[in-house]
Length: 241
Image (cartoon, rainbow, N blue to C red; front, side, top):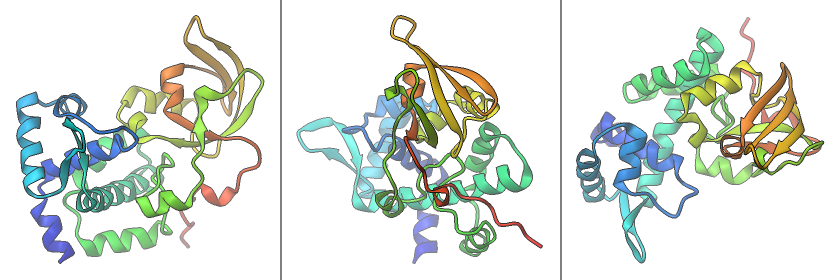
């Protein structure tokens, strides 16, 4: 049944489900917003919305006819797509050695193609990660069990924290992903905010590879945890003999 359901959801539809998932904290999304995310026309997005609605994967938000959200079936399908995507990202970054941004692009090419057997074996080989390499929970059930964290943008000068999660919204920005990785601002990294400027709309922090600067908007897409942090929150691929 799972194999049949996966085959029924086209590769293009899976990209839309991921786009919906990346906006899960929003009240809902519009075809225009998803069209911008996926770099397609508004007409193409509107047509895909109709197909997803016909398949009962999305539904209009109550009281907001222009806003759409995932149904329970849609959330389950989106989780399945994200799980495959996350496993492939671990493979590509941790085993193959690709940088974050390139791995994200490659995983998008592959996640609709892998078999259930390959997915199961890959998950076992990777040590059953609970997140993607950027710290995003692999499914909603996992998210409910993990700490929420808070935006890096909420920290004031002099405050320290641990990078916890580069949100799915941040993952959509390849330049931001590349900058964070280059500066060592990855899940588990310790940081201290050195200064914060409202006029410049930015903050400067000290991280594993020295100073880094972020605008407050991108800093809001990076979540941190203050104080002591359980190392088990940060997955490590098992060393194979």
